Image 1: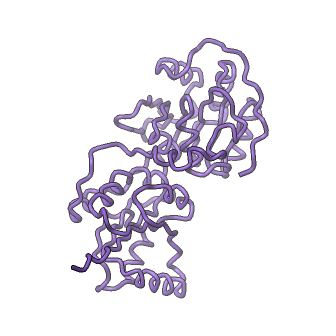
Image 2: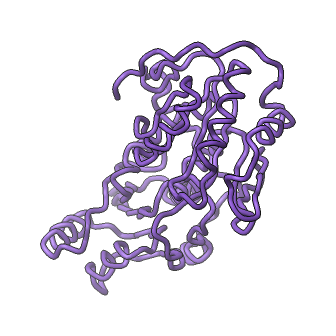
Image 3: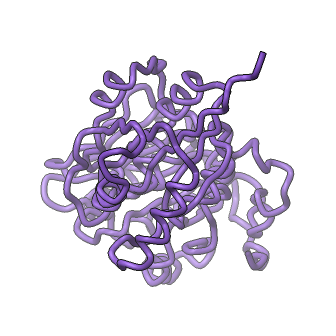
Length: 328
């Protein structure tokens, strides 16, 4: 008796880190539903490394720009040659819609989430695509659980560049995770004030995020030279490993805080009162300001971390200057 032909499945997830983290239970459900299938993920260039560590996919590729006609034709040819029988579109963004249109009416069976909310860039508090439509149409059984990306740390836990010491971090440390949007970000003075309290308590302040925040890091470091500025120096796997080891995080509208939450890091989120942040089932406290997040008092944040049991107000002595961080 001939064996059954292997099924080829394509999953599309191209809408940012927060959305990737949120989709973790759905990724698992797709794998459980298609245990013996070859499942390929199409994602963004920036998410490829963490996606390759994900246990639910057999291969990972980056979505090219489909605006260029020749590039689109070549990519569509490659997709057709892969003979995908099913596509799970978890983004429903412009590129995914272009791909579906290019494959034509006789393409693979296509399951899609509802249209993605319009945005210039995702952050931790903006609405994400709803998976309900796709789950129902595809007949998936999704566990009622929070995203759990501890697999991102387990994938390369023994690698030297996954250890805090790779960046000159020693002893207890806390993660500062500012977002990229100025109007929704806690100010540099707030982060610097908190970093100073951390230093006095023997906790090393570590700033993480995209390289666009490097000048913001310089502002914090001007007042707190003990700051370890890792903006633009970690990928998502490395950040997940740091978050799992950190004593706590403090962030505002950054996508990175969703990644930190998904590996069990706890802490404080600072946001505008009109744009609240919620994370059901997570050990966090949200601190809001009616007009400007910069109005949140650093000592208030420090006391909140103490009340959460994440720090002690006792002075444990100064933090030693960090060693020079290794190049990536």
